[in-house]
Length: 201
Image (cartoon, rainbow, N blue to C red):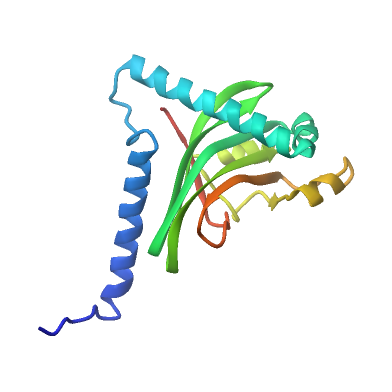
């Protein structure tokens, strides 16, 4: 029996549908679908779980990257996604939940979602921390449309070497980000195009 291949017009549509399915699967894996219809007790439990995971992720980042603690002292807020899952097969998607910390306290909860189309395969997880250096950048995050990385405030991804060179006079960008705790097999951890939106867990 001869198998037909999708037409050029249909193939991209199938890819985008696959991305949507991957996002749904990942969101189910990471504590289920978002819902505001659950009980108040469930909501508090979900928020508490995110807070615990954020605490653990920050401690891990500070232990492995001491310069991140120095940066935290200058930041107006720190948005932490403890466990972002990235999966791909032809189409790719990533998803995670996290919390914004101001003065050591949670100021809101957020999710991060991204999709891509192209040849890629694998699954990996990583932590993602964003240090917001001014109130304008935080305001962009809390806008009705959310924050798309690469659009609006400038976001600079730091490694340990760059972080050590950062000083008060060189820290002039809006947001500095660390990607840490990578596990799994997939090339590329680009964060451009990721969409961050406020949620009510």
